[in-house]
Image (cartoon, rainbow, N blue to C red; front, side, top):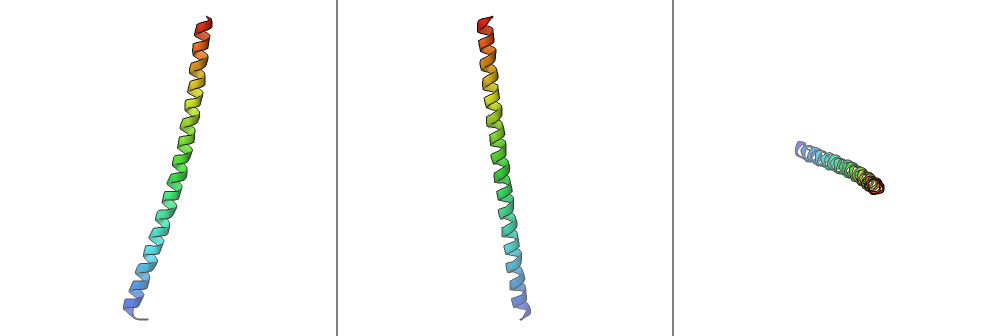
Length: 61
């Protein structure tokens, strides 16, 4: 193998490693964002229940 072929192989390996790292970061970000969306939906549901309970309490008193 010549030094040029070695350099090309090394560049390919670096490119593949960078692509794999980018894929893993995107996957991690997607899962994290999905988790935050679920958290926000849960909090909005709790807020809606609380607001409904407050309105019902005020109407009865």
